[in-house]
Length: 252
Image 1 (spheres, rainbow, N blue to C red):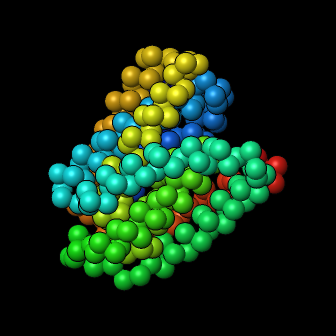
Image 2: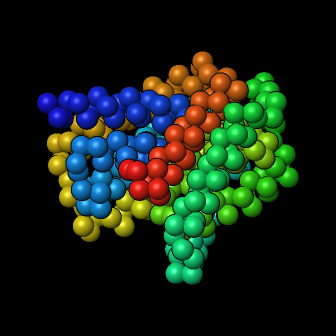
């Protein structure tokens, strides 16, 4: 019965993640924790594996729809991969709790910006200037360091940042789905040495997660406007901020 419940649950979560241009780990990790799985040996490698698969499923769908800005996506993949170790190195100099509170503040700020975004014209979505791409590259470096410091993926910070510097939410989500693929699998590889898998569960949830992400990306590409997507994402950022604040306060 647990196999059916988790497969169905990850299908739904992956649909939402695919629609937002994210891998599923940002929401799957806390949800899987509710079932009592070990965080380090089971949930983290499992979530990272599903994160990469769902990101690829979304990226392929968005690429076929012509929504990915490759001139942004490819450089940002390289930048975030290079700077992430800097964040890990900085960890020894700063209180982790302080940085987590900074993370909550950043999420609230980005949620506000996503709830009340600049005017976005989906008919001119791919008219992106080189200046905008340079700004995206600069902020991706900061996000990569911050994400490396906290040990989280950069995707859920990258997408609203792209909107903030001038991308429509649809193109930001589609481009972000490409950006998060490589970090997902490199992080997964780092966990392989001590990962513990229920292989049947892994296979079943991989299949349902990929299908869910593919359908979510298709739904977004055909039916969801940038303003709607931006406000849905704002809601997710608020939920993440509240969850982390409750953890820091010792409530969860």
